[in-house]
Amino acid sequence: MNREDELGELSDAFDTLLDEKVTQSSTKELVDAVDLIATSSKSQAKSTNSLLEQANEIVGSTRQTDKHMKQQSVNTELLGRYSKNLVDTVSEFKLVSDGQSAPPPISAASVKELESELDVELMVSNQ
Image (cartoon, rainbow, N blue to C red; front, side, top):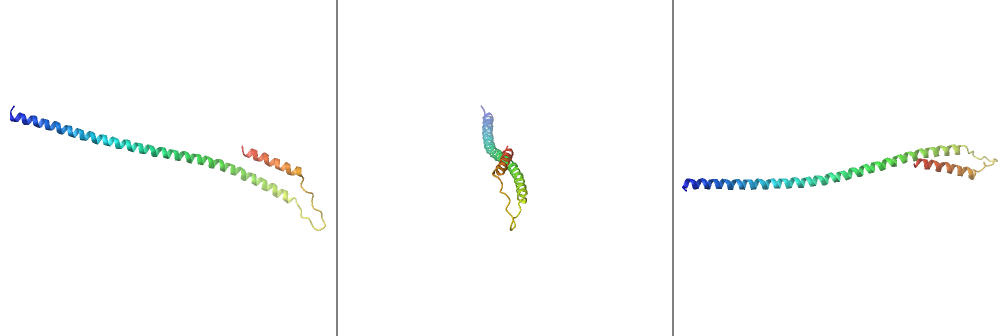
């Protein structure tokens, strides 16, 4: 083998070695990039799951608030009715003047009847 052939073979071997080094370097960079992408994807998945849990908590809280607001509305309506009944009842009373006798007391049956009506209204409103 002559010197030119040896130099040609040596140049080819060097090119092959250089190509292998470039390939190894490129492969390592690709593996590192894939690892970084995988790590970022896991982090994003955790963040997404956390946001989903928080959104579900907000939905639950909103439903609970809605339920309470509806109950409050019913309670307010009942309070208005009870207030009107109280005003109507109280307006029937007259102050006793000197020399007049007091009106008869409200009977226990009337009180029980009123309590029964209130209980029924409360049961209906809680359904």
